[in-house]
Length: 212
Image (cartoon, rainbow, N blue to C red; front, side):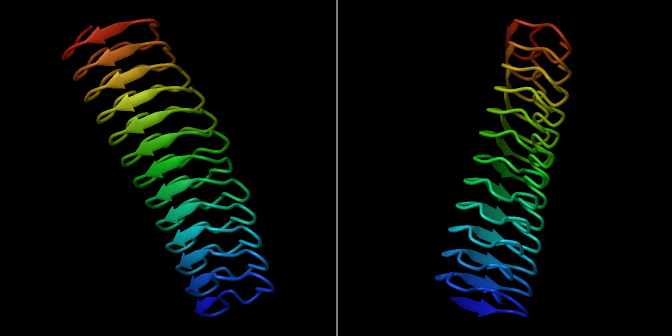
């Protein structure tokens, strides 16, 4: 083990191949191994989880037995305890997540996600309100920002699908595509502001700049 910092890795019993840099980094690890953490309180509660990377103050703070997670940024993946295969990069990315196999890159990306899994969000505030929705993929600043429980949505572009809350199975590609959709489902929009004004209509297809 490699240790640098006050109370870092001070509970280790059988854990090996760990690197802890920062005060109270990996302070509760007992038999976890091959973890790398840097930052004050990074990986603070981790006990027996393995192969985690936590970089930043409070990054991965509550991970206990979770493994194969990556948390980079202050409070990234903060609430996760036992879930696996999450990647959070950016301040508070995946902050509330307790489920596994999510990827969030950007300030507050997927910040509110709790039990939703298999989600991807890249961009500032992308998918930030998602709670239990699964299989959502948002790329762009504020894409899918207010989505909560809807699933299997794809939003690509600045504010694509940004106000959609519970709608599912939507595909929006383009700047502000399907921007004002709230509960609508099964829509497809390709192009700048395509289907932008649609709120609750379902089963629509729009291709082209400002189509429909």
